[in-house]
Image 1 (cartoon, one colour):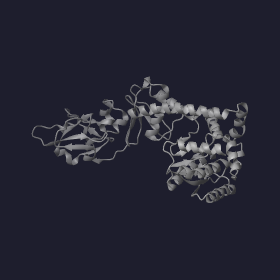
Image 2 (cartoon, helix red, strand yellow; image 1 turned 180 degrees about the horizontal axis):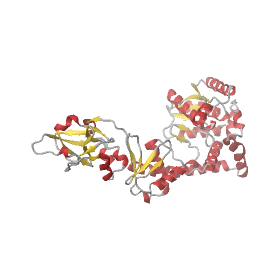
Image 3 (cartoon, rainbow, N blue to C red; image 1 turned 135 degrees about the vertical axis):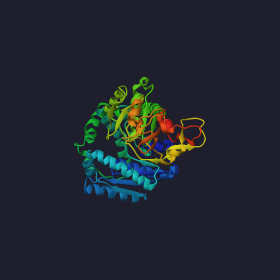
Image 4 (cartoon, helix red, strand yellow; image 1 turned 120 degrees about the vertical axis):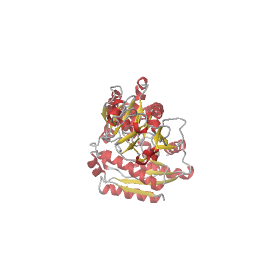
Amino acid sequence: MADALSAARGFLASLPSGVMGRKILCAVSGGCDSVCLAHMLYSLKDEMGFSVALAHVEHGIRGETSLRDARFVRDFAARLSLPFYIESVDAPAFAKKNGLSVETAARQLRYSALKRMADEYGAYYTATAHHALDQIETVMMHMLRGSGLHGLCGIAPVSGSLIRPLLSLDKDELLDYARLNSLSFMQDETNSDASYRRNEMRLSVVPALLSYEPSFTRMISRLTESLRMDDEALEALAQGELSARMYASERIAFLRLDGLEGSAGAIKRRLLRAFAGNAAGLTLEYDKTEELCAFISGERGRIINLPESNRAYLGNGRLYILRKRDESSFPLEEKFTVSEKKPQSGLYHAFPKALLSKAEARTRREGDFIIPFGMRGKKSVSDLMTDKKLDLPLRDAIFSVYSGAEALWIPSVCASERLRVSGGDDFVYLSPSGDFDKIIK
């Protein structure tokens, strides 16, 4: 069918990075949609200058019929003289182990397997056969779940290396393409099982919507395209804020909150979700995002629980993702610059050479103490940092100079009386190196 092939051609031609010289891995289940996509890519590869391989994931769900589908795709690839990749997974076992539905488990395992096969093939793109009715199902499922703007955008035509060339085509167009090109395909009997919620949507809800409004497919396509543009614009604004406000390393991660109270709610929520994602790899659902929005307007010093046993701390104008404390010791030179010459700028302190041999760099530990400059008595480092109203995560992130349990210099906080030098003393200058300025500002 010329129109379907033209749609696929136009999609591939519109990809920003192009397809000339690229390798495309095509995910093929054996059903009508993926067989049509594979045949379209095969038909266009010489014309457009790309290479194609077929990939199949056997999910371990349907027994012999699942193995039958795998053999069909292998034979189909052989008939087209295309490279073929296959990987078997155990979706039911993965679902049981991780408390997931079999559908969700299969989807997660499928995309992981496709990523591995794409890497093996050296694919620039991985193509899947989602079409216009899949888009309707997805949008409606997200709507019923109460998704926000991003969820209502549905399936993206391009998402990283994933491409969906058939999103503009409906099921009837693909069936016509298969018929006109004499393509055989497999039927997945589970597609007619209404006990799966998505199948129920496909079998009952979508036909009713199309009966009520025959142009519903086109309307959803227009809606998702419009929402996606709005979503991308808001996301760009949020990412700009994130770049200006976030700092993250292995030992500390925070988001500066100054001036954020005047930001639009849509930007604020996206910013918090992006921070959680970048700093801790977390995906925040709606309720947790709303809770976090209220949290940052509250009293300093509070802690909130986040997914996957993570916690956030509200500091002085900052939101922190709490990290696991690292009490490791390091040679002084790894965390401080030692110089005979007085630095021209930045934070530094004179340091008697006689103390260098026993000095090390580390963060605080229980039982640490310091003799503050100008005093004779000891003071616990913990009490000192509390008195200085230092944010809790900062207390565990600042590298200081210690000799045993005694702190000699806690940069920007306190120097020890032992660092007092006179004109005849032999001394050097110490300056914090690395990311100290970014953490303490």
